[in-house]
Image 1 (cartoon, rainbow, N blue to C red):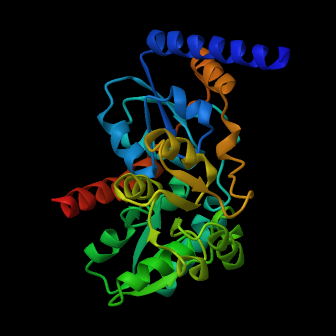
Image 2 (image 1 turned 90 degrees about the vertical axis):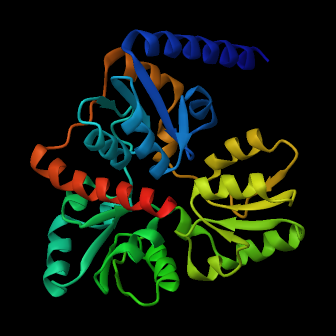
Length: 316
């Protein structure tokens, strides 16, 4: 009981400290849907990669505290070069982004010189700079459809690439052998068992999962897509096929609905590195500032901006 009271008071202390520092620094706090509950709670904006990338460009604040992983903060910094972008935890990286290097991508481009390179945003700025256009899980199909090239090198997530290929059969998709270590953990057997336990529940899943898992889905989409689907769906029970952080918003927006998870291993350790303490320190010390070398930023920014343009056109 004493520990619980201490934790509660310390949390309130950090929340007040962050609120004060945010005003003092003219800062905006954005958080990905996979962040800890406590971080999403104090964020001004929460969302998936695409939503956050777009919102940051519209922000009036001069400082952006990006509660996510490094590749996301890099994208924000490149799209808003007039702003200071801070990543609270310097070590917050992404194993998927590390599965591709610029050197290896250049070699692949030499093999297929006529192909367009579509780069999932879960990648480094340097890899984006070697790509023709970026995509997120929410707009990947529209991005690939928009290209005039018949052959596409899709990097670095093979599961998302395979999902896109099924929806754009007229394109030849050359898939990189990369994957999200969190989504790859989910097995068909785990989903089947959970569906047996909760037969009335719909299974909604992220396209970064294995093909055999996607085949069991009632809905496949990005975290933003899942959030929208659950809100509009008449069903009252859902099995969630993505990182557990999304459940915070799902429960908050749909208190009358129930959510189940097929595995306790659905946790991204890098996303969970950010805590209220690190957010407070980030604002107080103005760390860690994300800076992308200009020669890389110029090229990568074009790929990101092209993505935003195509997606806006697709929505009209």
